[in-house]
Image (cartoon, rainbow, N blue to C red; front, side):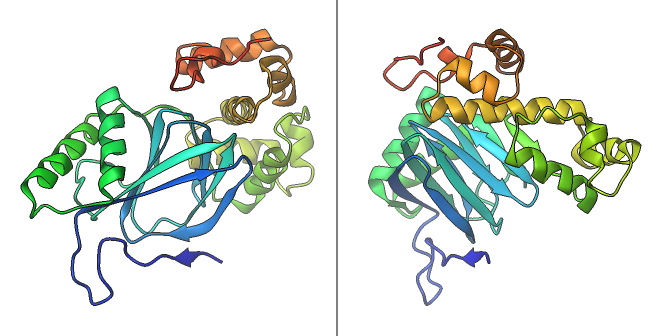
Length: 268
């Protein structure tokens, strides 16, 4: 059952305390924040570790030095892969008017990163204070210019297609073809193909590729080597995983998951 959190920007009597607030937490590998929602828009950022955000609409994987936008009143869970240093900003709804009303993962510039960390040191910012108002304005300006990155896995609404989704989420490396997966979902292969295309805007093959890519990313963050992560995610070889990773994200897993100190994961 989803928990509705109290406002962090309003006092119990309804008085506005500020337009932006922050919470910092260091969380262990495997920690899961149960389903909940906030009355504020939310920005989740981690300087280390990988976070996986899950809602009824899908899954978003957030690598280190990236962030995910969560609109107000969106029930969600967050799972940690590797130790995570999580920094969260809460915005008064409609403060960031230009941002879409859906979850999305974004690149975080060096300037935005420093602004997030600075806001976390201040805890709460109020536009009535000149210096704090300027910080809020710069953060909003930076967020309105961010680039989104393709690290989401949308879920279909159809219950039969969701049975296929749940089977593959339980084992992303499952090698069964769609026809065999459909045997237990109560629908034909053609129907499931149509549903995936209509409800996720991805054909089933593309959706499955995305699932394996994101699962491989989670495994790397939890400490697996590239070879082990590739095979467990269902790739035929490490080179196939690296090739798909480069195609989707523009670089190798080693470089993409380099931590904030410039150290990189081993490829072997």
